[in-house]
Each structure stands twice: as C-alpha cells, then as structure tokens.
Length: 341
Ligand code: KG4
Ligand code: ZN
Image (cartoon, rainbow, N blue to C red; front, top):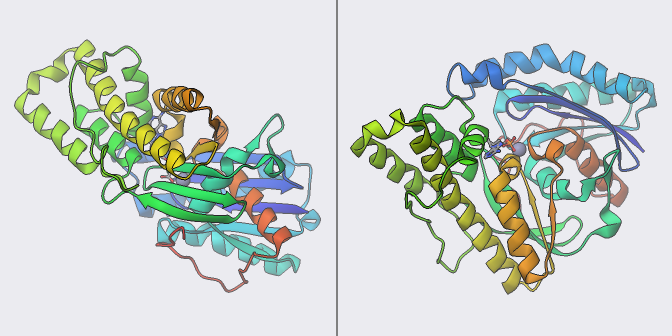
C-alpha cells in the first residue's frame, strides 16, 4: 500500500510517502527562522507559510519517492491537535487529492503518530511493528507531555499528562527569560553541555507524587523569580551555561523518574519516547541509563522523527488502513483540541 501523508499542525510543513511500512520520502520545511523573530509561533504566519510551502514540499516527496499521484492508494493528514487554520491547510489538501484520485482519506491524531514513531527506524526508515513490545511511552513536545501505557499496537491509554506547561514549553519559556531565540529547547541543550547542573537547585515539580501527571509551570516561575532577584547572572557566559544545565537537569529528572515508576508499576519491559524534546541529549542519556539499570528495552524516536514530520503520520495511517480502523471520510473536519484517548 502506498500513502501520501501531510503534516501541518504547527510550524513544520511536511509531506511523506510511505509504502508497506517503508518511508520512501519525508520532506520537512521548518518555519522556525520566521517565527523566531517574534519569539514564538504566530498562527497567521504559520498558515500562510503552509499554504506557500505545501505544494513544493508535496511535489518533492513524490519526486524523491519516484512516484506520481496516480500511484497512491490513500491520502493521510494530521487532523489534530494543532493550530486550527494550520491543520486546515494539510487536511483539506489531502482530502482534495483523495477526492480527485478517488482514493480513501485518513485523518490522524498527531500524538498517536508520535506515540508509534519509536517503532520506525533503520536506513531507509521502516516501521518495525513486528518487534513491538508492550511499553510505557513518554511523549514530550512543545505543547504536550504525556505518559501512555501501550498494551499492543493501536491499543493504548493515557496514564497522565501535564496539568499546566509542557516540558518543551518550559524549555522555550525559560529560554526566553534567559534571552535565547525561539525555540529555547535546542539552544538550552547546546548551552547546557558546558554547564554544571548542580550549581543551581530548581524544583522538581510532582517528582514524588504517586500519579502520572506532570507540572512545569512552577519550575519556569521559580527561574523567573531567581532571575528577577539576580539580574547580573546573565552577564556571565559560564553562569548562563550552568543555569541551562540546572534547569535541564530538573526537567529531565522528573520526566525520567516518572516514566520509570510507571513502567515498573505496570510491569512492562520496554519504554519508548518521542516528540521534539526527545532530541534533548541529556534526556536521551538519562533515559538510556535508567532503562539499562532496570533491564528495560528503550526505543527513542529516530532523530529525524523527533520533531514534527509526515512520515509518522503516513506509517500510522497505513497501519490503521490495514487493521480496518481508519475511520475518516472526505468531509471529516479538523479537530484542533483532539485528545489522545
Ligand atoms: O514535537 P515538536 O516538534 O512540536 C510539537 O508538537 O510541539 O516539539 C517541539 C518542542 C519545542 O518546545 C522545542 O523547544 C523542543 O521540542 N525541543 C527541544 C530540543 N529540540 C526540540 N527541547 C530540548 N532540547 C532539544 N534538543
Ligand atoms: Zn509534535
């Protein structure tokens, strides 16, 4: 089965061709430069960029896969969650193509696509669902932080989520307080490399709570007050590095500890992680050592699939079509607040 998938939920315009679980192409056009001028994603600009970029990105995806539109068996697009007008661009384009070609359309939940993205790996990238193991999965992106129990492929339920800011949002907001360009996450990761994580002691919210929820807004606020009371700290480069390392250590410790606790409680032998924040080197490192010491298998999304991309949308859409659980229609609407259930 050959699928063309589109992803336009936030600030990446992406198109991918997936055939029989194999990613034939995955083109991603990032808008980060444009939005960094404004310190965050501007929805109106994101929509205009998607409208401008989607046709050439889609053409490139087909070209790289050495296919024509007539070779496609189905179209897929992110249905939600995301920015309403941005979602509309990809969803309506995919539905129009499906209508013109007389092929089915599948709408995909963006988080569900992240959830199964760690099972796509290799060169070329390929879905390995035959190696699937029941797992506890951490999804950490700019807008969401979720812990999910995945019992089988397409059978999962959410254990907990953030009650306020997401982990990526916390990185980005603290980055802004420090004066780093948007998005702060990758910048803090880079600066933290030369920093001492024990120099400043920031709170680890909900670390010891028995539930599987997260909270990162208190951590961000404590950094804000700390900087208000110590305004000169930012003048020294090493201090900025230490600050980044200390904040990063607080976020990573909470994410890793709560993921491990859920995995132990649910008696799974496998942990997976996905979403933009899994590009963070400290998180990858600490997840790896925590899993190794407990004898867990760890699957972290391939670096190229951590941030938003259409390959994960196409792989999940194909799986759903094969299992007969792809329920979308040509007049399905966007779902900006779509939850993972
Ligand atoms: O999954 P994603 O591309 O988009 C959403 O669905 O939100 O995640 C974007 C988030 C941003 O908050 C960004 O700062 C964060 O992922 N991020 C990182 C790193 N790379 C991206 N956070 C920490 N360290 C990184 N290396
Ligand atoms: Zn995402």
